[in-house]
Length: 181
Image (tube, rainbow, N blue to C red; front, side, top):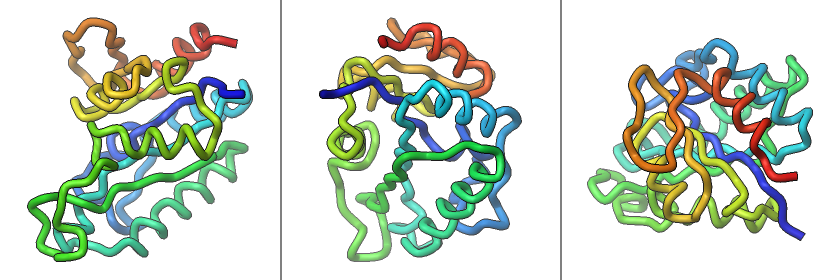
């Protein structure tokens, strides 16, 4: 039996996007993000992080660094009674300099690979789920899998069926009010 869930981008959604965040010393949580994730957790909604990590392909940091950042995020969330059910990342980029990761991938947003993997692992109905992020690729991922899209940032996204909010903290109550039970 599948259920709705929330797929969150990482940089610019949960933590500040300083460009290629590949070490824990660059992790800064966006105001209200931890509390928003905790609210989604309390509602028993599965929460997955789906993040493009081209910094691996570009040779700026390694997969182990991505894992360390995710563990750090998980540890800080746990301190506040929140958690991520699944972290997924795509280290591939066609313009990468690290040969093993210099290619296109179905996992790189806006392609649907990470969302499909999250759906399989967490038994999600993607058409009843939400994708939340701060880039056009996040909106494209939602469109690719038939999920609802929330665009975060100071500007709105003028695409049909896309809701815009300044932050995850502002978007979470909206999702909770509308999620199919």
